[in-house]
Length: 180
Image 1 (cartoon, rainbow, N blue to C red):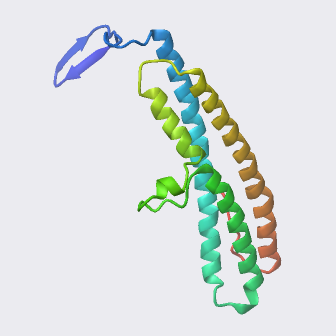
Image 2 (cartoon, rainbow, N blue to C red):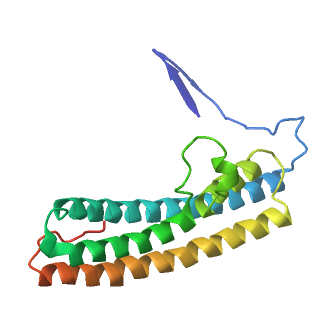
Image 3 (cartoon, rainbow, N blue to C red):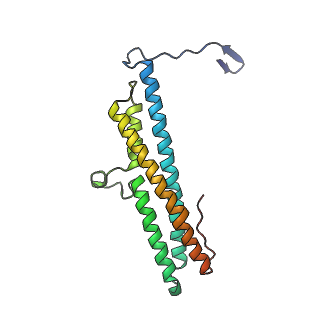
């Protein structure tokens, strides 16, 4: 390793040692890191899905606002509302959208998959010990939920959004909803 400060340089070997007060072995830390990386990957996938759903929902909201006073486009607004409700239902599987930051929200509205992943990652990563079998089981269960919600999100964004966009084109509306 090479350290430089102003014009001085020092080269040497960097050795990282475990905290001598830690009860975790190197193998446990490796196992912990592996599980936490898997959780982080699942959390990244969940956040990507949330962002895509929010992007589409924002465009639907803008379209509804543009068409709000057009009485001849009530069917388009109704279709947009219906699609938005289905997107929101999937989004609520990923994170709790009802939290306001006031009162007893955390008691009334339980954490969802992304929030559970974040919590589990913090718990496992907060020590030098390897994950317990229960923590591994929960990580696997949450991974399966992310995969399942991913399939549902894909179907909504590929099939139902495509059908909605086709309806917009058929009605000569140029506002096609895009997903990035």
